[in-house]
Image (cartoon, rainbow, N blue to C red; front, side, top):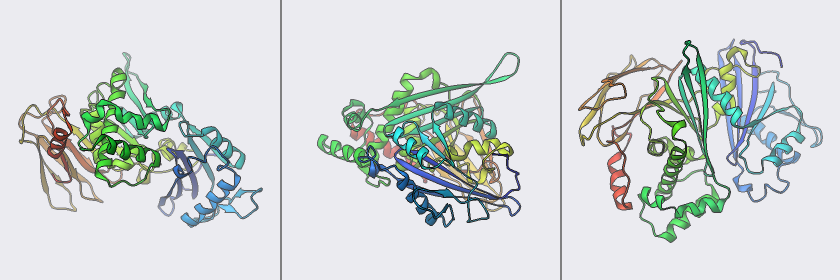
Length: 451
């Protein structure tokens, strides 16, 4: 396909099959009209898990899927032919036709071979790609360059597979820079192995929910087998938080050299968080589990790619005007950023360790502060103009490098920050020795939206 002009109208569909789900994104651009947006849809295929080894994925399945996608997006995608002859409509104008469709299939997806073959048999007009280690390396290296980060960690957390991909800039003696790519993984072979993991003694060490052994097994096994999309049950959320913390700690223990000093080597660090678990836990509790499991510290820009838009279109965005499918800007691709700050707080308790303020031409100046030992999230107001965030560390608290002040800008056009999260807990973080102690500690630590 020839390279597209930046001013050309274009519509492109990218589909990701991963974590027993299908994410579809239809991107439309018209730079003459300054019009750009992405339509998204999610299909949960976990309900088909006991039939995936049958003939669910077939021409009929995909024909019905794309026909339904037309209705959801209110967009003409297919020509109405028989099930034997299937064609996609060529792009004509907004709402009518597309210039291409790409399908990405995670190599960890259950029944990968059957799904892959069904897509290949369905249509020759589809561009088929596999999400493997090589794909992830190219993706995060290109994103790190485009976004200007020197150290970028991509964290993908599914119930069965935890994968961490990291790219770090290494300066050579001659002044040139090379990229160091590493991967760290942990995986389970079956549902029963994950269910049995609840018998790990560490589960009890991180839990803050007082349940009997029978209740624990019942909660956990039903969750693993059902894979619900929305969870509000506090006991189950606590189980998932504990499980996530343990898995990340296991990865850290086995990959110390690959993960050491993340957040501390450079000033421009970022973490992209994706997968099923962040959708379940939400950003706040996911960051709590990541901070404690990976023993993070320093200053880290954190982005949650829960809709897999970066996975779908990250390479297209990074390629800029050299993209061969669609040219996209930051607006609909890059998620809002949470500035994660993990200082050295010393041993001070119930003291202010950070005092800051927020300023903008849109809002009056507002002040905030953070006390030890809280895990404090400060939401930033939605803004169309530049937002200035400044503050200083108090009572002996310091970031690495002994910085005593903090100052950064949030700009909708480049780096849009939606929150600051300051971990004001003295190190080391100690859980246990029992569920009751954990409950009290979490009550002290958790301060979501209260700072």
